[in-house]
Length: 303
Image (cartoon, rainbow, N blue to C red; front, top):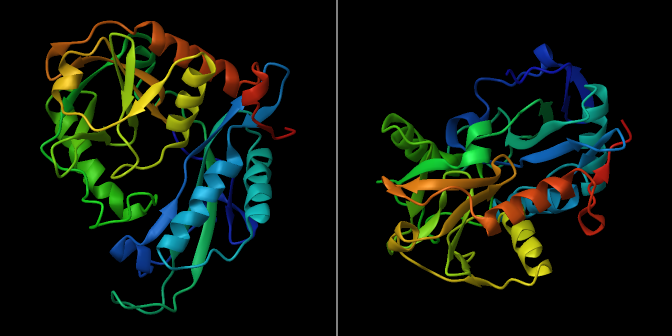
């Protein structure tokens, strides 16, 4: 499945896919300072598309840019309209949406501050991130030898382009060792998150997830918590070690790309098939993003 579409929105206008180019001396290409978001649009039961939590994603995009000390040259209202416009231009009712904010060419060096801030929005057809079988049956994960960034070494609440080198190396390692995904520990040895997902653990009906200290504050993570709380369950946001996963009754990962992905094995220790709480969150989430649950209604695109 490719990522090509008819148009990409760049700096205020739609341009053909092949013309959406940047200069090789763009600052972000060399140093990784830029921010992005991942958003999904889902086909609605009554027809058309619906973008799930678009405003929440855009707010995090602006927060990330603020933490990186550059200003996005468009208002949130303009980017909201641009996301919907790009979906319509590409005739997508269901798609992944990638807003990207990056620094262009001009000055070079770590102290450069005058380069133009560019904004692009791309959309493409992207299915299940960790595979259809993974969604149904669960995936195999392993703890990574790479440590998640120290909270004072990087801005963990920001979705920064360069941060993901850490995740890529961990994912490569896991895949090369025969696993679907990696789980990363923090500098104290506590469980942090996957390479692109947050994590929940269930044991004897107690649901735990790492606190937002050295992890990205995932929007799907928050949605999963809202689903569980809506159904009368409490969640403990607390630190725990890798052994909690080895004896867990259920484990699931959350993320815009990964959606709700069960874990069936950790470091060759069987967790088992997706359990009842995992299935509850998974089914409610998929019903919600497709417009079947009133309190979870997505933003309709009018396509």
